[in-house]
Image (tube, rainbow, N blue to C red; front, side, top):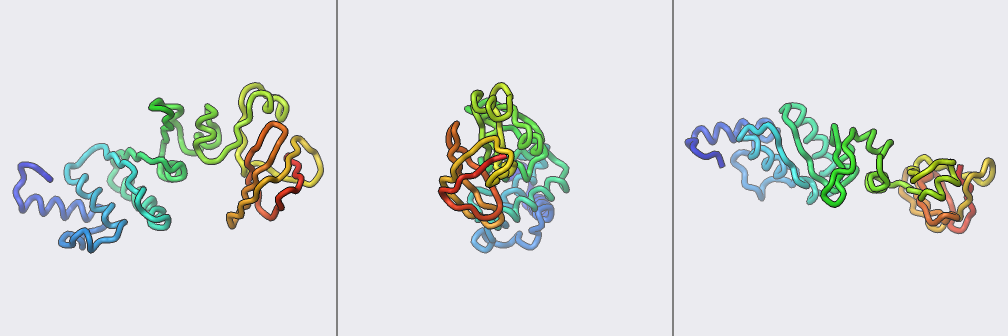
Length: 214
């Protein structure tokens, strides 16, 4: 609602807001006549009527199916760039946060753990929590980190950076405990001397095989 504005002006503002989100044709439609993605854009249009400088979106895509959610991610980014205002996008979906944001703030128990660009957050997490929360990562304790790479403190290794070999320069040996086929990649769970870790590897591997990780 826009308080203190007559009906004609409200209609004009609503039409303008709907045009901004690409829904000028839907001004006379009922919610039941709109798709899930269109209803999301109508909600944004209602917020835009007041011409905010900052728009807070709290889990706006959580109820949508995967394909529609991915489509709306693209549309929301285009809309933000067209409007030129700040969007604060709250989500528990790490992939969504990385794909949509210019900067990401990771919270842990109400405190900010790290604020960074998506790439820096993923490639250079500053704490074990950020490393394990954003995407999938193997976070080794201090003892195993010292054994594997000669480093002090915790060590984070993304599954896509692990290579499995039957033989060669062996740094850590492990037994494949579980295999999850995911199309373009196969996710493996390895049992190591320092505990179970997860690795991602394209191709085929069988449970019970011994793998040498480099």
